[in-house]
Length: 331
Image 1: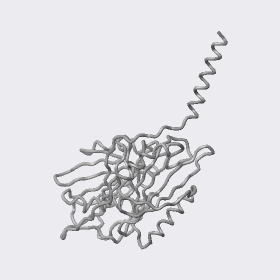
Image 2 (image 1 turned 30 degrees about the vertical axis):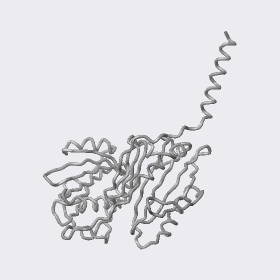
Image 3 (image 1 turned 90 degrees about the vertical axis):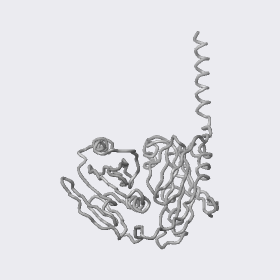
């Protein structure tokens, strides 16, 4: 009997050791859905079970919020997975090579560059930068960034994964990259308002934002809020408003749950604003006017951002309002 148990135990241990030694199987490409960026108009497809946790101009795709949190702080314990990002930024007088050098410098701050090769994205010439970031003594993060210029914009499409997950998702990464499309240029219609390309900085004790200088400041009722400020375009119903009030020790999820009942919400979602999780809901207060309310918490303060825009001319108003949010720096 003892001999039988010993043989069984030996077989069990052998199976465990064999299983631990196997490499992760390649992940198959399943059903995809399309993401279209509201600000820049590019599209990319991603696995339907993944989540888009970025914002316009800074799209970020992960298997879960836990994976996104792990990428924000790779050194801490957390859920392993992969990341796909599409970042768009204006050249602002810099050359393409200047921007590439900044990308290289950002990589070298945390890891090493392994190789650089010319590639194409659609019909655009691009540069692929492969890199490795050490996470622990036994695990690295593998990744590559593909960078190119389109008009006056700098695009950075990044693919990364912890340990074996990077190689295992190679087919998924390739499929997503092949699905990427650049926007068709939009012809501006005379008489329709458009945001100025000249940006000004607005500074508060809680955050800073950059905004088009042809927006007009408004003074909404402050009430019990610690801050209330607004900006509007050429229409009174096309505006962005910031309100700050105490979170009373509650996380953003609890704040969102407490406030969402005040809105006749159509859809809800999540994004990341300057590294902080933000939750939002879309609603329509009156015919032809659509609105969106964001909630985020920083330093026990709730920052609520409310967008209102004329639906028939959505692109003229929503895009610059979303762009303001992408410039937000929290204090």
